[in-house]
Length: 132
Image (cartoon, rainbow, N blue to C red; front, side, top):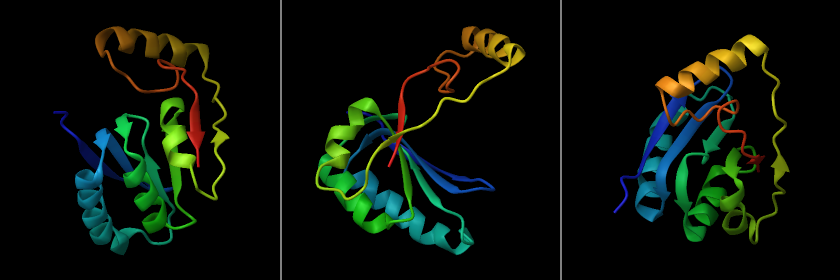
């Protein structure tokens, strides 16, 4: 059994919920309870559900999350999560444009990747990301 959890990041531009592990009904219930508490500090910022680190996304949990999150919320997902998430949804997935990093930043990130395996930044892991 995988250890699934979510993290709430209170960022200046958005209130971001990051999923680690498997997004299933049990984790979704915890996320919704945390989100109910966090709505008081949202202050008009958009909600972003970050599924880039999710090991798997159950289709029923993603459908329920879409219905609860509302039309203004954004979702970040990897290629393998898209089929179950976009089925029956009015949202269209768009590929997130890659950001360009300076040579110094790429060199620094390469060094950090050696020291800290598992980095999820787009320099270290240039996988395709989607926004819904």
